[in-house]
Length: 264
Image 1 (cartoon, rainbow, N blue to C red):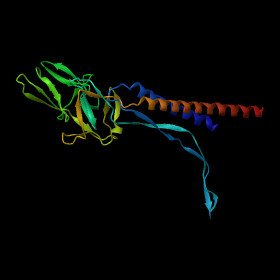
Image 2 (image 1 turned 30 degrees about the vertical axis):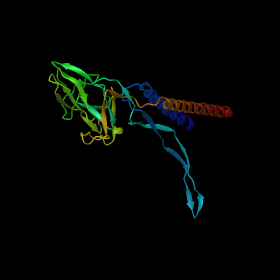
Image 3 (image 1 turned 120 degrees about the vertical axis):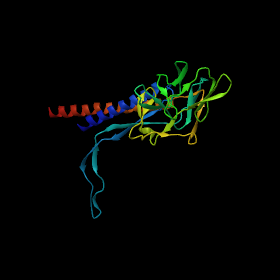
């Protein structure tokens, strides 16, 4: 019976939907997390009878029956999250478009909007790193070194970093590398708030100081853009759809049982 398999695909699709919603809710407090939405398409159709119009007579519509649905993708929403004030010198948030660039231990480059940076001591100087210790890059793809003894570290709206030395003179330490992509939705999520470039996203496009469509805000972090109320509504809708598909399977089973009893 076709309805059994059709309803089963619907249950699988809603299970995937619930999994996506659960991941969103579990990351409601994750810095710079971007909400995901599951997308679906209908499966192929069996055409029992085609349209047949001859001299304005015949059947004007097709007679078709579908075979359910399937998940086809997860769309990530890169809208701006709200800001949380931390007053931490090395916490920065991007107000607008763009990503920070970091280097992994194997030399690969990854991208993130999580600006909760830390200072890793290396000899007498420090290096700006992520929570996992990945090196934060400047616009020349070099590590950002914070010289020992510098005070009043300042990161301005363009991403330039500077500090005061013992003589109260400002010392420039470089500029945070900011990049964007032609299609940010094509980025591959790798966990740890990191993304990698793909063919779909296109290569990185460096954002110069005069090309910024936004600003860097020091002492703040970007929060998750997940809206709990919206996700709860989606969860209820997905749960009801799952129940309806389950009821369809029960109804189909009862119909088959009735047919079997008729044969007896």
